[in-house]
Length: 378
Ligand SMILES: Nc1ncnc2c1ncn2[C@@H]1O[C@H](COP(=O)(O)OP(=O)(O)OP(=O)(O)O)[C@@H](O)[C@H]1O
Ligand SMILES: [Mg+2]
Image (cartoon, rainbow, N blue to C red; front, top):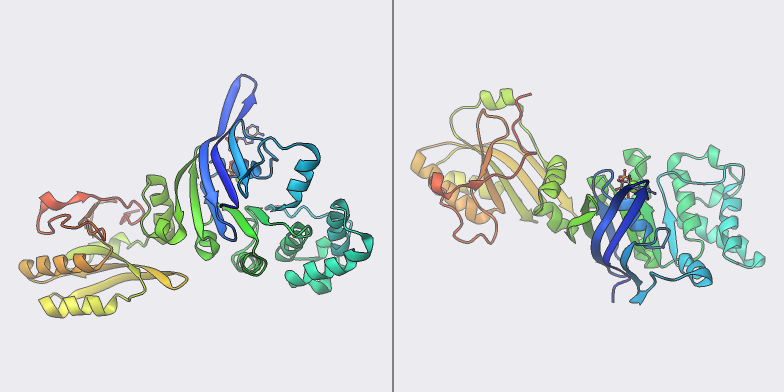
């Protein structure tokens, strides 16, 4: 059973005569104990969607289920006890500035009915979880942004929630502090078994901690799946452009213009193997010199997505044979046009693409997909 399930959830807002459809028919399932991410451009409906999970936003239609129980219509005291099961953190840390860290957390404990005698112990426990035990008497203004966010995480955990919702929780933080917060969230998720739903527009964050990810655009989920799969083979144009922007590597136009004759290729591979042996073997086997112009490997835990741009030269027949061999061993092989802007053509090397395209001529080419790998002239 999923920890969270949305069934065909829609949210409409009415502004005068205008209706804004912020969320349109979204269905998704979040498994217990995972970190589920929602990514998408501004205005996609991410915050609205996440607010339906604790009914801060009631769906206009559709159902919200927690542990299989339909909570969509819950009211009153049941709603209050339901909200205790769900912690929430935001981009702004929302700490009370004229209260100490300890008092801020005490406030949440008191509101949730914790007996006074137990609160000091609980505050210490919570601050230890976020490694800020020594800050109990500090005021928020004396803390860094990362520390303030850790306090707000501690406060969100006050009621021992099963679920933690994070709306752009790292968007106001620099890279290093973001990593610090992500590792706290990951630790909470793994050690306390708390299911996390995390909204971000930063793919770095997605890559670092999401188990599964849903991509939103104009109120709908356009694609969802395991994070690695979404990064390795995005299906929807928007996902592709998001991922390309993140993974894509570009060569300066001057570099391309100055290249000796040869086929300019972008190769992608998945898994844990490295590319060097393959490239050098093929180069030796067919007598085709290979010039590696750019290489990048992104790791997702133990799995990698590698991207490299090579120039393959040699006798035309040998080059064709080398291409065929390469294509059988890599996830995708895309020929980049030399000189023209942004035009690419793929050699249909998609893993299970079977007999796919004929590398030897125009007929076998399929339309290219990657705008982010464009060799821009400007
Ligand atoms: N209370 C509201 N009243 C009217 N329209 C709203 C309201 N809340 C959100 N919207 C609209 O719903 C759409 C989705 O907004 P939402 O805040 O969910 O997007 P988002 O993906 O979280 O964006 P961002 O990345 O900028 O935070 C937007 O068009 C927004 O203007
Ligand atoms: Mg938002």
